[in-house]
Image 1 (cartoon, rainbow, N blue to C red):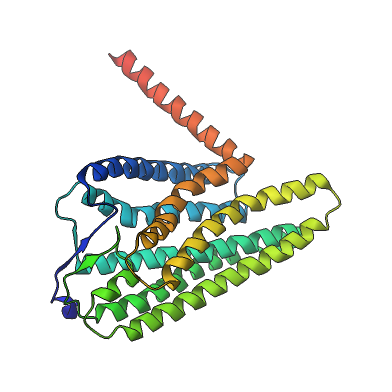
Image 2 (cartoon, rainbow, N blue to C red; image 1 turned 90 degrees about the vertical axis):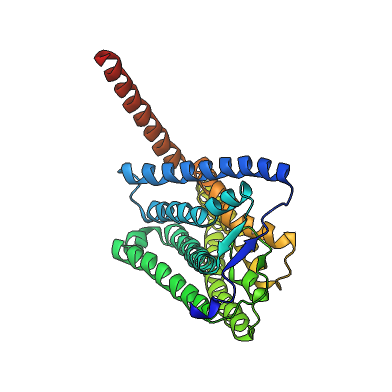
Length: 319
């Protein structure tokens, strides 16, 4: 970290410079953050407490909710703080750490979405071999492999960024720190960093995207060949929620990291799309489309209401 001592902190411009707009944005994003935490926590608790939700699909869905909890918590607390603070700054070390976690968690989520597409391929195209293809140890290996590859990818790019000299007046044209936003702030040669980021992202993204495309190509071919209309609609319903999440996430992330960094509001919109909006929408998308998840969440809410009602009655008796 010694090479970044020329500049000790960056200024995060955020979403608006108007104080009144910032106050409105603070309330909006505070509600979004609370809903994100509540929705993903409920899905995570519902899956972990319901014995019927033990299939690989729900195993991966639980990990997706856990990733969304982490993803939203990496950037949003600092964004909320800056919306009510006069000094909208972040230390260089803190900025690099945030960029590392954004890239690592985002990469893990992309790999997990690809794994979930393969899970749907195994369930729909090979239903009789599904439990053999998606055994417990294989699912665990896919999960840990996703984490390991994404962390390695992020570590390579972050270590290269640590060696940069940030000697300009550091103004980040975004609400959080991401590697593409830091390169224009450096007075060092960033060609190696840009090349490494572009190639690691393209290899990472193309691998996951190809797995999604191949998996769903086989899935759609199998569905269209089904003779039962009911079976076809049921198969489509199990895939539609995942396809919606994949489209939202991959589309915005691809445009954010492939397009040249210019500091435009479009870049901020893409960052908001995959790091704020997608973690908020995921619980609603999966719960609205999945009867088992809705049932598990109803049971969890009923159990919580019964527990708090029991505690309230105990207090009344004691008083």
